[in-house]
Length: 106
Ligand code: SF4
Ligand code: SF4
Image (cartoon, rainbow, N blue to C red; front, top):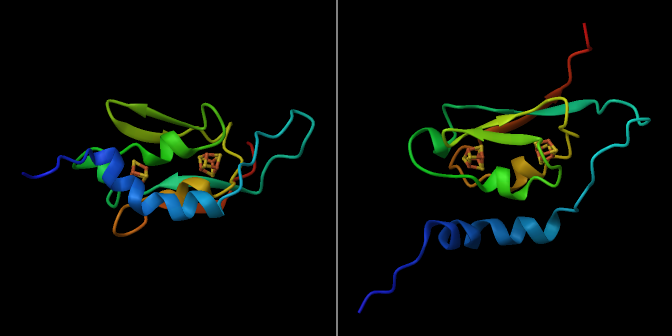
């Protein structure tokens, strides 16, 4: 008899080692400087565009920094601290998340 494993449990096998390594940074206080980096999701590598994945959304330590619309993740730059946790846990074969320098506010 075959055992049924959920997608979340399966992906968790790959994510767990990174979770142990990743610290749990918190959102910057309003008085703190704007983070120098911000996460960017590359849709062409993101599993959510062709299948189902929400690992980055679940693991991001900052509420509201990654949101999903119809299953597709999107980074809210205003909330992202650039901590890099999402990039560390992304299970896509070609990591779908980059940490890029933040553009100065207009
Ligand atoms: S963890 Fe990676 S593959 Fe999964 S939804 Fe986020 S960016 Fe896409
Ligand atoms: S870098 Fe990724 S995990 Fe960290 S706050 Fe930004 S979106 Fe969340």
